[in-house]
Amino acid sequence: MSTCSESGPPQEALFFVLAFLPVFELVSMSQVCKSLRDAINNNMPWLSVVVEPPLNKGLSDDILMKVTSKANGRLRVLSLKNCVKVTDEGLLKVVEENPFISKLYTPGCTSITPEGLIEAVKLLTKNNHSLKSIKINGINNMKKEDLETLHNLMDLDRTQQKKGKILYHEHKKCSSLGHEEIDRSIDVDVCPKCSSVRMVFDCPGDFCPRKQQHWTIECRGCDNCIPRCEECGICITGQELAEAAFADALCLECWLQLPECNFCNKPYCNQHAHQGCCKFSGSSGFVCTACHAKLS
Image (cartoon, rainbow, N blue to C red; front, side):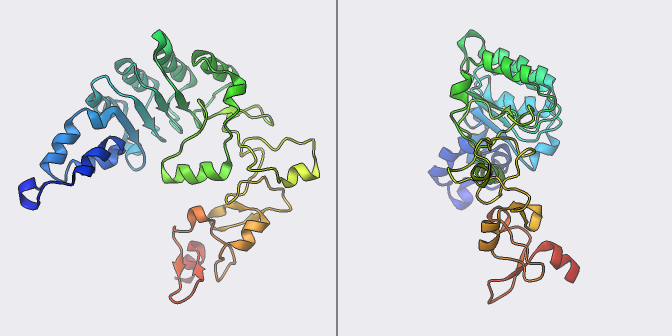
């Protein structure tokens, strides 16, 4: 670790962004110099704890308690993405120590149960504490009755909850970049097709081939019930389905517009365009990872 006297103090702007950094970046920044380490040891940067890959794999209940204790009971945002080792016990301990959490995000935390989540929300909504939003997609065995309980605890009106549309392609893009925001208090809903509690996606616009063919069909549902184009989000039928590299589903219109592999003719959607493709120098073409592996 360097000292400020060796290379000069950090730019002041760095201190302002500390409160917005995920845990991994905070830990990395604390190794830069003493002044940054001292600033990070202050409780202000820890009012928002965001744990994403790669730290999510090793995050246990004990480590979570140590990290959140730096907020000294003032934690406002707890975001745990795919933290499979965090259990009900760990979550409830953090919530008990930090009753003013306004955003609780636990998508893909498969060791947290619906019962544990409900207990956490009970703690965060009593005494008029302001829990504004939760993200719980990927928590196993969530039932319709559990979702209704969460709505009641958070005093949500179901018609108001459905006003915020979730578009498939925008959700995929934002979640891959790590800054997903959803205009709903709860990210999941009851799928009108299969009645499962999952993320339910809307069509992105008035133009919808499914509605044009069958005007009585509602093209709103989870991704298990209605396949959607990774690029534009419209629902696609079996006849329109085109496969891309990374096994992404594309509508024919998007499939024709995207650049294709020079060998298998499968395109990359924009979400994966920067991953694992070998471009030819002086050419707009590329070789996808599957073809590159066969050729090498």
